[in-house]
Length: 158
Image 1: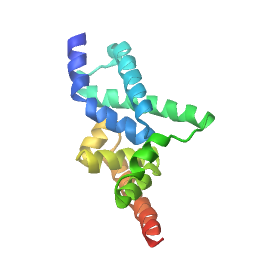
Image 2: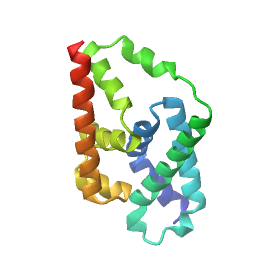
Image 3: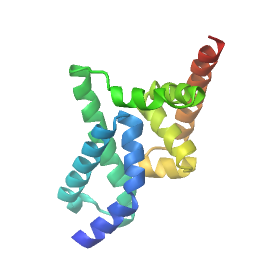
C-alpha cells in the first residue's frame, strides 16, 4: 500500500477512529495521541495487511490495542481528568448525567454505545469495524443499556 492510498483510507476513517478512542479513553488529549500512535504503527506494519479490503477492521484493532495500552499505563498512575467534568458541568443537567453514566461504562460497552447511538453504525458495521462477532456487540449494547438504566434511575431518584 502506497502513502497516498494509506492517507486517503485513514482520512475516511478519521471520525470513526476518534470516536473509538474517545469511547475508551474519554480524554481528548489522550485520544489525539493514541490515534496518531495507531496511525504511525499501522503505517509501519502496513505490509502485514493481507487483504486491503479489511483495512478498516485492521486499523480499528490496532487503535483498540493502543487504547488498552494507555489504560494499562493509567492503572499504574491514576489521575482525575478535570477538563471533561468541567465541560459537562456547565451544560444541561440531564445531558451531564447521561455523559457521566456513559463514561462509567466498561470501555467495550462505551465504544459500542458511542458507535451505535452517536455515530449511527449498525450492529454489523460495529462488529466488522472491531473484528468482533455481531453477537458480542449485541451483548455489549444490552449490558450497557441495562447498566445505564440502573445508573440513570438511581441518579434521577435523588
